[in-house]
Length: 205
Ligand code: GRF
Image (cartoon, rainbow, N blue to C red; front, side, top):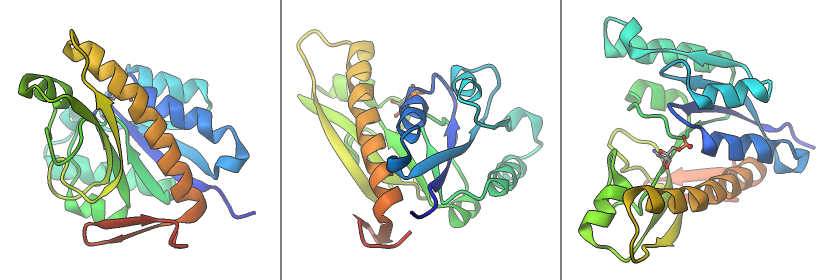
């Protein structure tokens, strides 16, 4: 059997997407292993989840660095140490530089159907716009904000009486399932990215 795909997961908050990956990775047939979890702040539940799972953690806070480039380079250095095949930004609330992205194939989840409602407030913006269907998107991170080539998407119906919290919770449930399914397939079958076209199962790793 081939070696499990090495994942470094980046988080900034509650880490429920991370937890879904940690849980999936307990099954050897899943094909991936979370080798480290990184954050841009201390004291968050995402780091506690990693610690409970016995996964090494690291924190690189922007405020500890004089420049954003310095922070980004330090993040890349520590990520590199864990030799990831794939970096998953799961609720990581910082943009990564093109230098970082050139080093690591990095996926991100966004709680809206890209290209609609990019940015920090996907569920709120979808609700304000009055859409009837929104969802979540897994994409390859590029230099833009939630603009990268799309790996997977899942629709979520907006219900009468939804507020931002209730809608985001339902999106997150769908988002976690999408993330686990796509990362597992990528681990087992490979991924190729050609321009905006992403293919899973092309035999590449
Ligand atoms: C997710 O909805 C993610 O798409 C968004 O923030 C949420 C993070 O949730 N950027 P969690 O930290 O994985 O629970």
